[in-house]
Image (cartoon, rainbow, N blue to C red; front, side, top):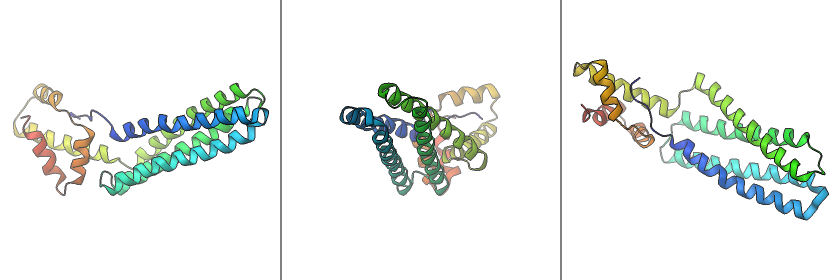
Length: 201
């Protein structure tokens, strides 16, 4: 495979979204900390569930909007939903596991244990979901990348280039997520990919 995608727009969107979603979660925890003191346990658990549900809903809305705009296929849309739900489940279980090992009276350690458990298990669950899904479903980016590499290989053969020459040309090609999304929208994806690559030869 000669070409690689230089970025991943989906991950960038979600990575930008997650810190914004974490902030209200921390604010909610601090408000509860000052309001209820020793009785923080039940209130924080309840607030955590609501914040996680809202966070997941926000990510699902992003996925729905991208799908409606034609930026993802039905298959990719399913992948995105599964990954969002895996973060919700893993994060929630991680929160309960983290807070379960700390006494409720020690509120500061209790909160940090919850955050660490939530983030750690959430990330692990998402990674595991990605690994399982990749065995059965190819993402849109993987499929478009395969088409670009297929057309690149054809052009290399048409121009009778050596492996070294092909590698040198490949280094000059910046294949990004936007280009792959545009390819996904095309009726003749192979022709589009070929037209994008021809100028480099």
